[in-house]
Amino acid sequence: MSTSFDPAALCTACGLCCSGALFDFGPLAPEEVETAQDSGMAVLEAEDEFGFALPCPALDGACCTAYSSRPATCRTYRCQLLRAAETGDVAVERALTIIARAREAAASVIAQLPPGETITDARRRRREASASNGAAVMIAPPGLMMALGMLDLMLDQHFRHASERQIMPRE
Ligand code: SF4
Ligand code: SF4
Image (cartoon, rainbow, N blue to C red; front, side):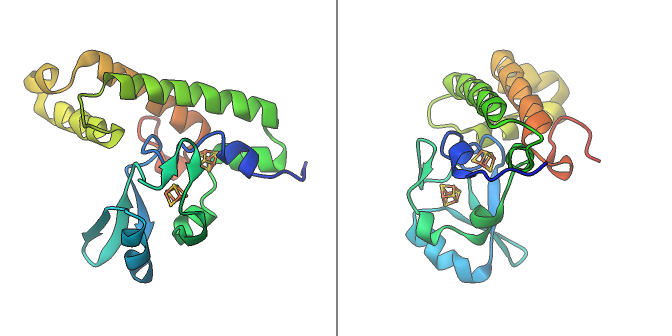
């Protein structure tokens, strides 16, 4: 089933793919680097490939303040939930409820972060904790890791495409 539906109705209530909740970075084409820097983004470079760090400084609440100059990845990215809402597989009201729950889960993680850290930093802590065995408790507060795990499960289930998942198995 197909519906006419304005994706902005979901995205302006969400912003999870810009806030660092869904991903740690976004890709950039080489010709987009200068514009991204002008928008205040932290440009990453590795092996001649470019990206920008998330959370994005152009995000204000759930809205993009660099909309007309945003990178191509921002123009084209559609999460699993948005695609399902566009095709009518998930009702818009249901999608908005899922977004509200995911934003609450992200807020719970953010509330437990040490000052100055981001969700990306928390994921790095989780990777370090996973690799450090006995030292895990010291470098990764259990409450924060539990909240992060619940957030990533929700994002895997409703937002990330199969190849993007962090907790659930990738297909
Ligand atoms: S996570 Fe999905 S619904 Fe949310 S802003 Fe990104 S594309 Fe839109
Ligand atoms: S430039 Fe705009 S759309 Fe792209 S990540 Fe930043 S806030 Fe989101």
